[in-house]
Amino acid sequence: MEAIVRACSREHWPAEVAAVIANRPDAAGLAFAASQGIATVVVDHRQFPDREAFDAALSAEIDRFSPDLLVLAGFMRVLTPGFVDRYAGRMLNVHPSLLPSFAGLKTHQQALDAGVRLHGASVHFVTSQLDHGPIVIQSAVPVLAGDDAAALAARVLATEHVIYPRAVRWFVEGRLALDGLRVTLTPPEEPQWLFAGQTAGEGV
Image 1 (spheres, rainbow, N blue to C red):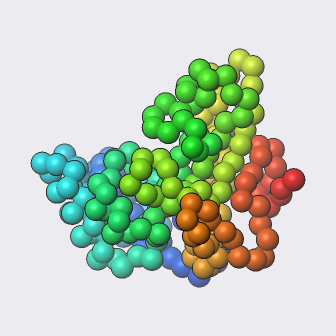
Image 2 (spheres, rainbow, N blue to C red):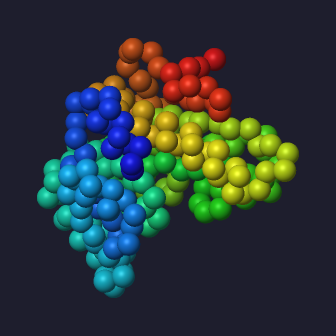
């Protein structure tokens, strides 16, 4: 979230971050958002009897700000199909794997256990199928000898901070088009992938 807020300001996107909404009162991002003059809201999921009630309250708070785009960042709740449908085509998520591989939790350990040579992250449009949906951009890092889940996670996270702001910028610039499960990017040309060790604008 911080990377997106900073990129929006630094790169002068034609947009603003309207609000940061958390389901945990102790979420660290709330303090950062407040320090940037961004509205903050807490909708504590523990105060609701079920997912449907929580999602209804969450959508009510979201709609007060009339956002064009919802960006999930560190939000570890499974959203109901009704909520996802309400914001279809305008909700992004980042997942720490090269989807469709390793959906769900503990993705870095999943990658190590599977013996893959490349791991990474994916920014995708959210659909009712968990950790699936049209992929906007992906980043890849090598799995190195001696890696544990923590070391691999740190390298992946560094790339997330590059690709997630990039994907959000493309959306607010009106440059993303959905064609089934395929996301196309209108010119100017920019790579929709990133390999570790490359700078933010490079591709091969």
